[in-house]
Length: 103
Image 1 (spheres, helix red, strand yellow):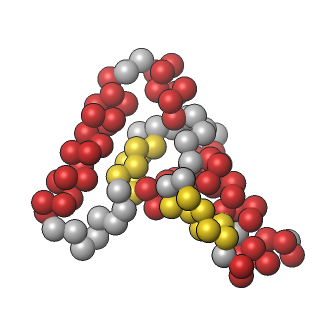
Image 2 (cartoon, rainbow, N blue to C red; image 1 turned 120 degrees about the horizontal axis):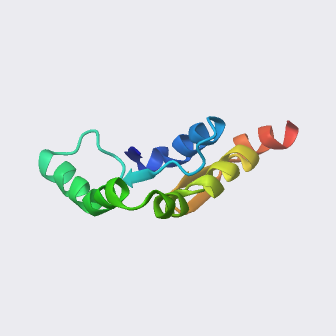
């Protein structure tokens, strides 16, 4: 299992796919963590606590099905279209998009 901020979910998925770990559990904590006071970091951690526990205790088959491909669509959009994504929303960066179209 990898716990990362949601901003880095697409990068974590791209890396896991390169390594052949398409169903690696990626648990996203709300971004950012840097600069947050202890109370806010604790609240963000508590928000994902149940997901972390279930990922550690559920049967492997259900975990695999739950996480297979999570963030994959966002990763592909970033790679193919020069899109910058946060959670389920993407914005196309014209500079990156032009580079993607030239490649």
